[in-house]
Image 1 (cartoon, rainbow over the protein chains, first blue to last red):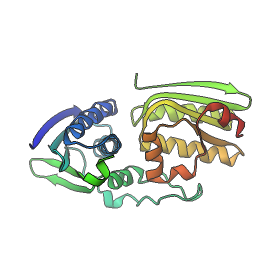
Image 2 (image 1 turned 90 degrees about the vertical axis):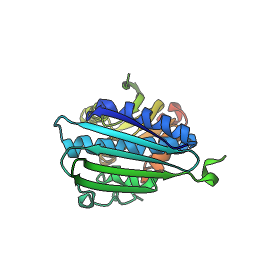
Image 3 (image 1 turned 120 degrees about the vertical axis):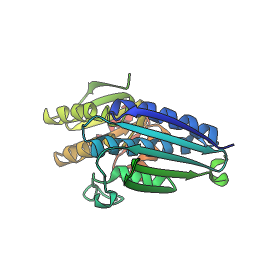
Amino acid sequence: MTRTRRLVVPAQNDQLAKLATFVASAAVDAGFNANTISRIELAVDEACSNIIDHAYAGAPGAIRCDVTTEPLQQLTIVLVDQGRPFNPDLVPEYEYCRSLNEAKIGGLGLHLMRQVMDDVCFEFSLPGVGNRLTMVKHYDRNSECP
Amino acid sequence: MLMEISVKPLKEVDIISVSGRIDSATAPEFDNALKGLLERGRRKLALDFSSLSYVSSAGLRAMLSALKTAKNSGGNVVLVAANERIRDTLTLVGFHTLFLQFDDAVDAVDSF
């Protein structure tokens, strides 16, 4: 049965652990295994850190997190903020590093989000909404079962 | 308790034990601890992650910065007892090839 749950928190780094726990709880209900749940938490942490650091950039604001679970099918996370639009295309693409000289620091967060989620969609300055980030993780029976 | 750090010198190596989670809230303290040691000339660091549950990109950036500084002065930064979750995150960004990893601190200290 499809279920949507919502958490609204101040856009502050000290809320990241709470957001991670909220999303992990939903991911458990959707049937994902521990490894996938950890990865989903990571994606949400990175996304919310970007909102706090780049969209609000120290200004007060809120993050709304809606998580929709369709057990053994998929989990959809929608993050909404009213900060400055943040264009991910301007972030240099992360280059998977093979040596210390090649290792770059920029773009790590976005890279992780795209690595662990199946769909990552940014929408900006939507009338009456704000900025909206939608991330989807599909349930893959082959990889979720031991 | 989101994160706690303690430092124990053993021979020429500093064992930095980190517990809790390293995310954007706690990474600045973690980064400062590493930078503080490196600025004092310590360059052989073993990060004991046996009580660390999680690290985000904010922590990875601090680790990479410390590794580059240490290597530039002939030292190194190695990892001890990182859990499966942290190892998975390291692999997702390719950092597993940059950091030597050990199961216990004694082996890590002996590696320098």
